[in-house]
Length: 135
Image 1 (cartoon, rainbow, N blue to C red):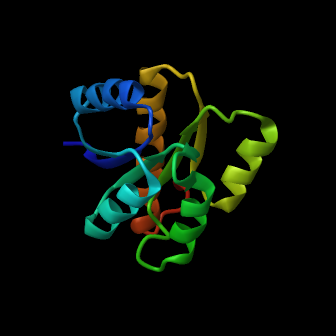
Image 2: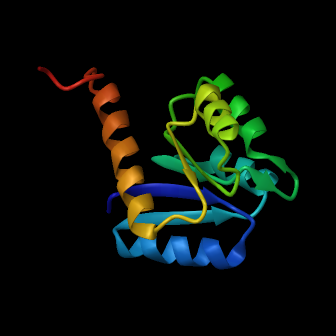
């Protein structure tokens, strides 16, 4: 298994497709369709990474990002934003609030997997005290 992921997105069709693709690539995937359900799952964690939509029926994923980065237990959880909000300003704000990557929809499932692998690699290096590979 490559890791345990939480996918928070209210688009059931997209969530099923992305979840199936991630599972086929060795990830354990849990899903939530609202911020409230996502918060509940995060409390029950642990997860190796979070894939988060920004536009959810009960709020904005940016609010959850702020909460996660303020929570000592979850502030280092790798977070990839996967959202239809792809304007430069939205990307910058997402990254400035603490997202590790920002992927606008639509994207190819293969790119999503590559980006998840990259943020997991970076987080493992940080946990091992290696922010950057030696030169």
